[in-house]
Length: 347
Image (tube, rainbow, N blue to C red):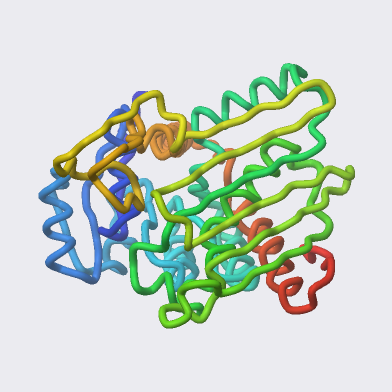
């Protein structure tokens, strides 16, 4: 790529660190500035990653004329506000998952980027995970025949930041937090031209009664127009670190992905081993470290894709429209939790 894509990163927390890990091996870009309301953390983040500029002026960063792309690595409750500001400033924008807290916010974001005519990317890591993309290759070859059912699971012992636990700020609990990955994975495996038409969901607070007013466990069933079924299991009460798996069943075969429990390496440590894995609870005993965590989760591949799309002025394969569809599905799921029956997805 001849063009160097000039990036402004908004946010200096958990997901922004993963974005920087993902960008490390991506050619044709430079992160010129990181902006965050927390001055101390923002300065430390810039120093850690060698970013030449840091600031607490988020709005000013969005309006800068020397940036080609804004990446939003921020909490759910500011996604809509900041994405709309990017659109109004004419800035290409990538937003972390979930796109919004609900489909109303997501629709406002989608309308804004469409009206502005900018490039918009939905940073859904799961469908950029190398294992998941390889699974899709086998599906496209016809290796397992017609896909009939998808089962996905994401579980850990709970979120890393306080705002995640507050339903009003996050938009939901475990289902919104992790179910968004599984909704898009199901669409990726089964086909986006085959919409999810109805859902049945269960969710409850099984453990974290004093910490959250949202569900800490949920199960979601999704029926597609073509008759296929997808099952999503999410949990904030699963001990032992992140558990991230997919099972794809077809008429002529099956595919399994597991990037956190089948990593190709095992370590037994009597002394503290330090950081092992996202949401890891222990650093002694038997450990299962992922190899190049940002890569296996999909951060590197998605960042590479978004940088290339901006350089080539083409729309990414995951856009705000995909994020909006996911929010529509999850809104129906939350209705189903209340009604305890199948609910139609209203797009």
